[in-house]
Length: 162
Image 1 (cartoon, helix red, strand yellow):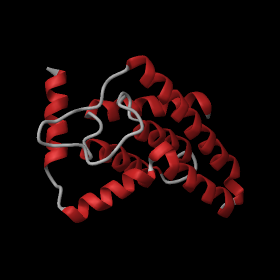
Image 2: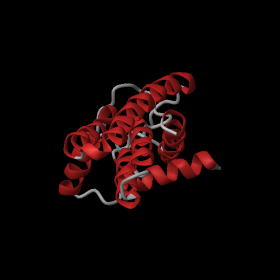
Image 3: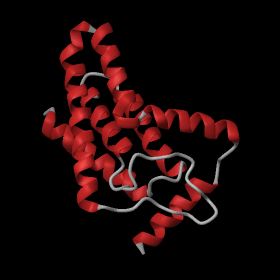
Image 4: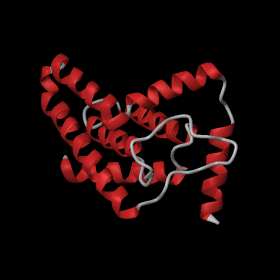
């Protein structure tokens, strides 16, 4: 039953709300999240522009890198294949054929957790959520992949940057 719900939600996210202009924007945004890049860039920018919070930005960068590496390891343990939807090809290429958990979601929620200790949480989690949702929108992750990534990233942040 959960698998069927996961697939139905993926199909909905992949099939609805796909005008060409929106697809281009979402896919560009999603690409910025490769390897935690968006969060590393934002943390590096913060480190340079906000010297009073350099420890926060350093912790964020270390946590994003750690979360990304932990995510890769977990993907190789779980080995869940990426979704394939008949008639709805994926809109983005991926580094591997493994999907669980989503690295975009893992790194985004890890960064949001660390940065929200001193910065407004709502916009951080809004960006993290948008990044995570961009992946099933593109057809490269099941919704359960991004939910697992959110939980995993938050847990990694608690372990690496308590």
